[in-house]
Amino acid sequence: MDINKSLELQLHAKDRIPGLCQLLSKRPDQFSWGVWPGYFSKAKGAKVWDLDGNEYLDMSISGIGATVLGYADEDVDNPVKWAIDNGVASSLNCPEEVELADLLCELHPWAQMCRFTRTGGESMMVAIRIARAYTGKDKIAFCGYHGWHDWYLAANIGTENALGEHLLSGLSPCGVPSSLQGTAFPFRYNKISELEEIVSKHGKELGVIVMEPIRNRPPEDGFLNKVRALADECGAVLIIDEISAGFRLNPGGAHLLFDLTPDIAVFSKAIGNGYSISAVIGKSNVMQAAQKSFISSTNWTERVGFTAAIATIKKYIAVKAHEHLIALGEHVQDVWARIANKNNIDIEISGIAPLSHFSYKAFDPYVAKAYMIQEMLEYGVLSSTIFYPMYSHSNNDMKIYEEALNKVFAKIQKFNNELELKLKGKKSAAGFARIS
Ligand SMILES: Cc1ncc(COP(=O)(O)O)c(C=O)c1O
Image (cartoon, rainbow, N blue to C red; front, side, top):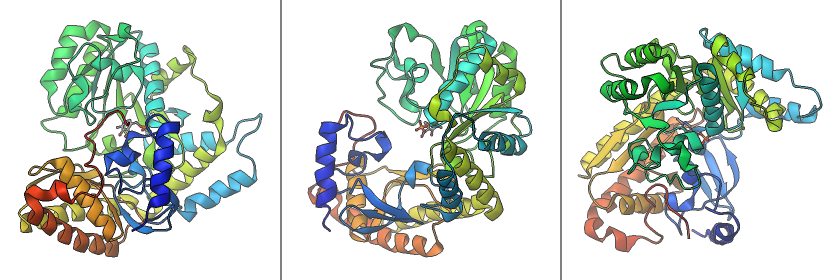
């Protein structure tokens, strides 16, 4: 397979763009440097074409979970094209932002107000600012990954690796003011005692509790309600980050499934089907605190993002997309378990069905991952140890994937200790690291 144009551009890009691209998860070294195509010329449905004209079935990160309906979905793109033809920006505001706010509040009756931004991390920053403005308290307790902003990375200042157990390890707080040390404290999912300890130490200054509603495993032992109770006890705003979990298990935030009432919830990824849009929704008394602070940005008014989100959410509801995402996710986890077992490969499967992933427990996991990616490319399949289903994935796609992966797992077992010698590119990078 010839991917010369892609490889040339990667070499050029790493000297032109620090870190090669804008998102760690799309960096070729996260897959296998030298064999991963890295760039696309076209994407449609569940297919991707690279710069050299190779066509792939994408069974990997699916736009890192943003394109929940599938690539270039016409039911989203046609309204977007209408918006482009009618102007995406002017001196006046577009009415679509009010329509999207209404739609999100109807889906989440506990929320009465919304603000919008364009990216997940940015919307989390807005949510944190509103929460701090509302409570007048600076400190944050959090669980999980919430983006690249100062408030979050501050947790790693002066600690060995506070963020190590929260999705992405090795994140460096370099460039974050050291004065933010001691402002953000992590607790692990389902470990209520860890949050209790933070509340008992910092309760008076704790203005915010932030977490995902679910990611890898379901809440146990009333965990979410206990978090809610602790937030109420110390007067903290409870922010539920639905950036990855939202619109996967149900049409709306996953918190709706657990009878949890947050003060603020944050959406991005799935609501835009790849277009840039994020939403911060919340109770009106809390959200009104946005007016005490200065939260304002030119491109937050742009029309395409709102238009795409309205169309995406309406289609998602109409086709009950979550049912397909859950079914495919369960199917893939079953495929992984069966063929790993058949080929005697030790893996650990995790994640809610629509955000499925596994890790190799035998071999060097980053060698095994790179080898799998390399060999799956030979079958025309983009793969990873993550699979995020899209509505556009078909049962036939799953069949193609299963057949190819079965053969690749057999080879992994066969080559065993010599796997690294079989790599045509580099082994996968382990999380956040400098690209050279
Ligand atoms: C739960 C969660 N919060 C925040 C973010 C950051 O979103 P973005 O990459 O759009 O800044 C992510 C991204 O993966 C996420 O999964």
